Image (cartoon, chains in turn purple, brown):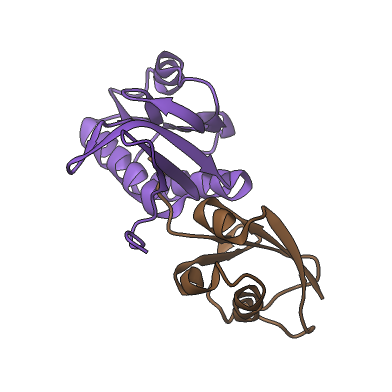
Amino acid sequence: MPDPAARLVELTREPIDTAALLAFVNTPECGAVVLFLGTVRELTGDKRTVALDYDAYPEMATSKMHELIDETVARWDVRRAAIVHRLGHLELGEASVAIAVSCPHRRAAFEAGQFLIDEFKVRVPVWKKENWADGTTEWVHPGLEGT
Amino acid sequence: MKVHVLFFARARDLAGCESVEISLPDNACVGDVRDSLAARFPGLAPLLPAMFLALDNEYVDDRAAMREGCTVACFPPVSGG
C-alpha cells in the first residue's frame, strides 16, 4: 500500500459517515470490502448503560492507528484501510468505531478487519466512560475493575 | 531535567489535573517518573503500578531513558472500540 491516500485514520466528534468510509475503500482492484462497526451496547452483564463518553490521547492514538495499518498491510493484501473512532458523548446504538478494509479476496479482508479491531482495543489510547442507568459513571479500564 | 506528564481517563480524575511538570535527575528513567508521581499524587499512587507510562507516544518499560523536554503520558488500560 505505497499510496498514502490508500489509508484514512481519524478521531472525530461527529457521527461516523460509514457510506464515506465504504466509498473510500472501494476500488476496482478489490473484490471484498469488510466494514466493522463497534456500537454502544445497552447491557453489560446485568448492568444497564444509557450512554458512553469516549476520550483519547489524540497524538498517540493517531500514531498507533497508523502503526496498526502498517502491520496489517505487511501481513495481508490490503489495498485500502480506514479506521475512525468517535470521541465525546454517544447514545445507545451509535457507532463508536468503524474499520473498513478492501482486499482482492474476502478471506484477507475478514482477517485484516478482525486484526485491526482486536489490536485497536488493546493498543490505541482511547477510553470509554460508562453512564449507568442508576446515574453513576465509571471509566472502563480492563483489569482494574473494582479498584 | 524537566518532564511534561499528561494524565488521561481515571488517572486524570485521581491526579486532579490534566498535566504536570516534574523535575528529575539528568539520568532519570521512566520508573523515576512513576516514583515521583506516587509521591506527589497520593490518590493516584495505589493504581500507579497498573498505569501505562508512554514516552513520546510509544509504550515503554520503566527502564527507558528520559530526555530533556520529553512528554510522558500516564493512563490506565485502554478501552476503545
